[in-house]
View 1: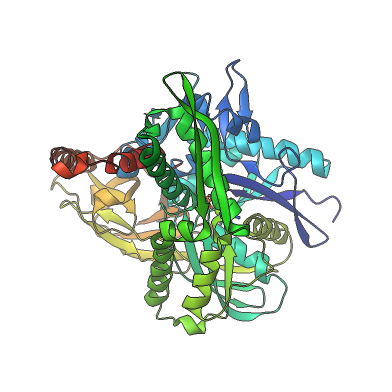
View 2: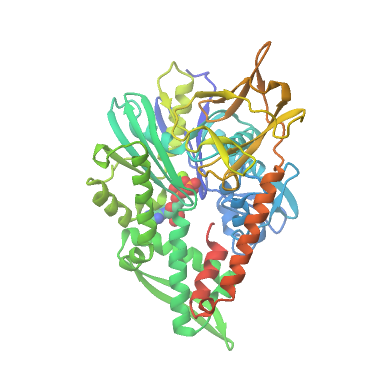
Length: 542
Ligand SMILES: Nc1ncnc2c1ncn2[C@@H]1O[C@H](COP(=O)(O)OP(=O)(O)OP(=O)(O)O)[C@@H](O)[C@H]1O
Ligand SMILES: [Mg+2]
């Protein structure tokens, strides 16, 4: 045991990153930053040109926003030319640019960094910390990712791990890791629902646990629903109240906005424990040379009213996921809460109302994903102590000339899996190659899905069998039958296909037209509504 290579489990979160290791079969979190167990997922460049990671990087968010990268988990593994990246461009303070390979990238101090590079800075820091804490080199890791991550996002996280010097033994879905932390070695036979409301995303998975067999029955979520949306509601409220009292629009001041954002989050967290708080920000502005202070009380009832619809949305998603597999709410034996935002009393109360039972206590909402990743990491070296039967969260298919997607792999199929079909003829008769643009996503429309890449095979292969294989990490491999036997083919290119470019341009134009129409409609000039939309555009998806 002693000379086995040491391996850690990493939860690379939108807001916070955690690392855990297993000793004598017990997983424990490694303290990472200033004595804390979490490392903020922030990378920055200081005024002096030093690269900062974690708490120190987060500290300079207000003063040096252009060179402070946060929330990059939303960008990693995405094409620059995509709807999601188009949306996100307006939300982050730092610049998002196109890397030479067409992926989204970011700039820091005027230099372009790929997103795997940015994540690798966080992972490298974790590696150093874990090595110091555990004493000795650590070269292997299991890294968790959201269940809804596409093939490209998973590949990009693997790449980040590699850049940080890890041999990434496995990518595991976050809810599955959480389930492991809950059920490992407990000999359970239960259906559980993992409700993960984190900083940026909501994820739900239903699993069947039988001993150490963890089978994912259904999974779903919303990539744009998390703690930051709750903070924004509080920010909107604060801005409106301040406007009512002073007729000063603080949304014009980036520094004031950053202070309000921090205070809004802190107030939200305090309201988990206490029923009332006062948001107190002295000298938030100046008027005629005199300081203006901001002092706004907020009760838990206020917060609940401001965010009720967000909480309701999580339950709509839970119901949809259950309905997809025809599972009744009453069949769920336990509800496991994961993610910092799930601590909100309203969430816990609504769980009780919705499922008729309280959520399970005793699973740490911040730590369980990292702990589960560490347990899986540890078990990889031993003889099949854990069996994970995970599921695909989003269908995979190829684009048709009409801009729609023909599905090959359906949602919720158990992985690993193989789906075979016959290669269609080339799009243009007489072309030397058959080209297939591969997409992953829930929509039937290509433009709303993520482009994974293009396969290219000689035209004479038309009619031959082609296999789409998903391995246990939910990574895609393609095999084509040839006279000499099956041959693995790699994606020939990840350059955005012309058809997708056209569709994206069309969608962008439609959106611009809509924006123009609503800008000229009288309602958008009403008092108050302007503030609301500003908060949205500046901070919505941190
Ligand atoms: N006591 C609390 N009450 C309410 N919200 C909280 C509390 N503690 C933390 N949060 C919120 O939880 C969020 C962070 O959660 P977490 O660390 O689980 O996210 P993450 O893992 O980084 O994100 P994701 O899983 O979406 O990638 C923040 O929005 C934070 O404000
Ligand atoms: Mg998380």
